[in-house]
Length: 79
Image (cartoon, rainbow, N blue to C red; front, side, top):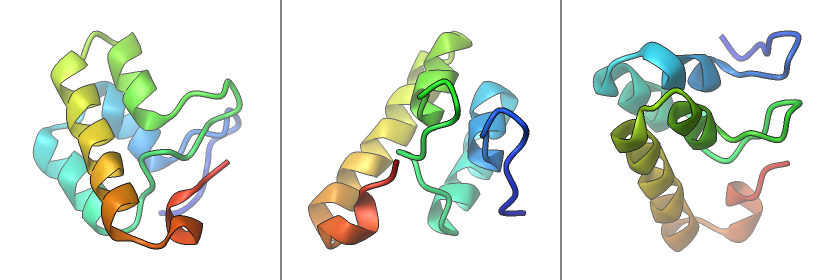
């Protein structure tokens, strides 16, 4: 579940391409990080945008903003 593929994509990166909002929300609420970068330096919301899923990208990014506002900085920052 927490594995990454050979491009550094997490399940959230993959889901950002095709999955429903419900699955994205499930992943976010269960610890998948919206700011985790793959090997190309893309965050999940950037992957969503690159597939034309602008509303999904905005949704994932908004969740990341909420994390930044509500959690200690050390828990939010990801490389």
